Length: 263
Image (cartoon, rainbow, N blue to C red; front, side, top):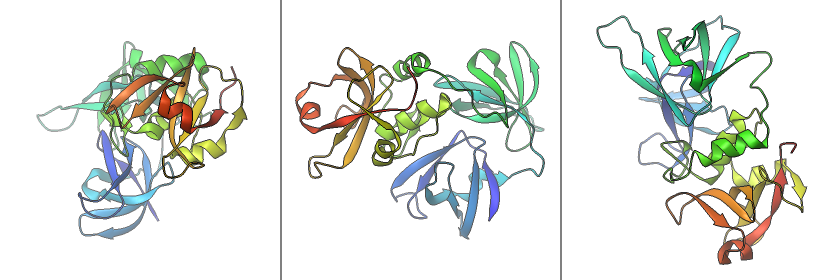
């Protein structure tokens, strides 16, 4: 398998090699994917979240043999990267929460990064968090998780999405916990199995709900805020909203809470 990097702000991963197929998840700028096969303009890959699917191959570039040890992660819903290429155009790229790039040098208040293409770029230091590759993303607590979560209020619902441009319920929880140094599975049912069950919810816990036709299968997830409220990407509302746990549908289909961060 060949390792390649995503060179676009975000790349859709489809269930089949055509745009009309179901979007199963997304892959962020700079993320590594393992290429399994090529078919025309499409590449079948394994995404960082473990999903298998098809990406437009034009969005991929070869991964370098040598990787830098100092990395940064975008620590806001989105920031702008000023790319500095060899041509006349120097486009602005959007980098979303959880995007990880290699650091060239710190020139605070700006940080020079190495883009997947090998070209340099500049990002504001206030919007990123630096760390060492071998140490991984620094672990943050529930307070930071909730601070980030509230910044996603009003973001559009998008099936398969994981960014501030649009996301689904488990995409929201997946990317928020990723940014806090906790690796969650991508889907709600798998997230339910991964956590520690709790009866007394505290802010930052995840709350799970069943679908109407499958009363014991987790199909929806949100983040508990406290005071009986949870934040979630709602397909019914078409955006990220805050809802009472006691609201009719959610009270009837509630399956329980799971904890992944120490209060």
